Length: 240
Ligand code: ATP
Image (cartoon, rainbow, N blue to C red):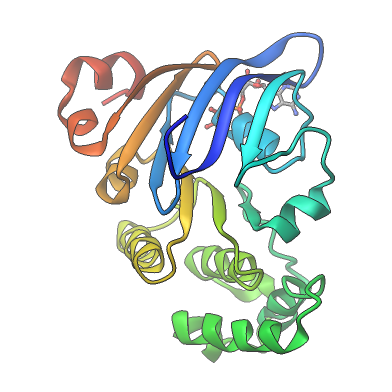
């Protein structure tokens, strides 16, 4: 309902079979915000991202992106509208080189010139990838793979980035680098980010607000600083 919301989710119920995983989820994401999606294992965080990116069809509810109702819309259209999903595990094609993976991220784009420009920008953003242009995906470190997955998403110049567990398996230093980069991207491009993280501290270090899911329902939404300081909430839902 918020003015300037890029994404409005209301009454969203979704899951994999007869029994829903998400129940009546309501979420408003302002344009340019970084929102952390938090909650224990199995709370439904990944399911939420999969539903928003069109990989899962909602049973009920509405998803409105930039004023457009996305119900029943094809994934390809969502991508063209500016929704990019970087799944947990990252989806890098390990047999292809860094350069080939990045070009894959731009194949669907009609504006070839801008796709080429975006490729150069990604290499500027991730000098480590530029150095490893010709390396195969399987030769990369975990951090490099995460950067590649992010870079591939950025080639589409998304407006909304759905990012699932970017810190998974990464050293704290690399996680911090990725978080800093996200914040920087938001400042420079106005990118809006929904960030699913088990690493609550990292996520709240860059998020404006956090949403806490438990058993597929939104139980709390608050600004990041207050969530960090709310010991009861942390113990109840976040495990620290
Ligand atoms: P995690 O951090 O462990 O990924 P999560 O909060 O992202 O947790 P989800 O992955 O969304 O949680 O899972 C929510 C529920 O949906 C869990 O009970 C899980 O068992 C179930 N689930 C997840 N994926 C599937 C699937 N492909 N088929 C059936 N059930 C699934």
